[in-house]
Image 1 (cartoon, rainbow, N blue to C red):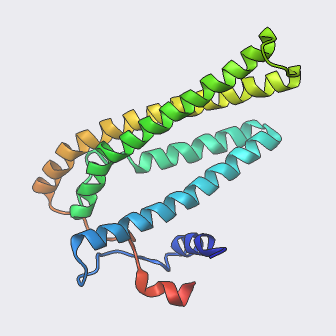
Image 2: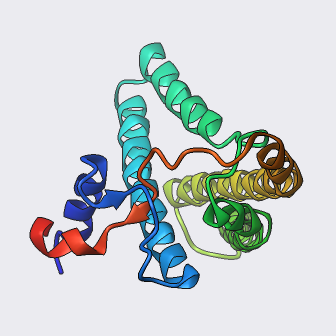
Amino acid sequence: MPGFFDRAKQAIVNKSLGKKEPDAKQNPVENYVDHAHFLLIKSLQKFDTLKEKYGKLEKDGTEASFYDLLSFIKKEANKHLTICEKLRDGHDYFDEVVGATAIPALGMIASTAALGMAIWEGAQALAIHAGFKEGTDKEKSAHLENAGTMLLASAAAFVGAVASFLKSAISLVTRPVVTAIEGFAAQDKDRFYDKSSIAAKL
């Protein structure tokens, strides 16, 4: 449905599709699916913001735009430094399980794929340079630029995968310990997709 995710993301931002606690009528798996949906839509909204700030930096290239982008990245990174935070419930703990397993695996796959693309683009540029393939200097430069972009993407995915694994692996131990000492954290923020409001809002 055209515009569905755009409206859903805006609704999440306005806290109209989120709820703080899991549905008592659902089983843990169904509730975690709602939790994952909520996190996905929030991530898409943040990615849109990141693209917007990066696009602004590419357009004007000012120092202010650069620091605005860095500030946004730093702010989002700090939100995920939850090594010593209390757990709210089992869904919080399973987030750490996913962060130590599935996310690093997907990150490594993405890193490998991007590295393969970088090698391919570099080979295309080299073939043009050596005369094995017809092409202009402009085409060679385009291949080199694509290779550089893919190489950076590969490195970013690799670093992200390693960071996710280390952070979540540590949190799997530290957060339950903190929770055992201090008790569970309050469920005071939206973390679940509220399906009951979808029809009314969308």
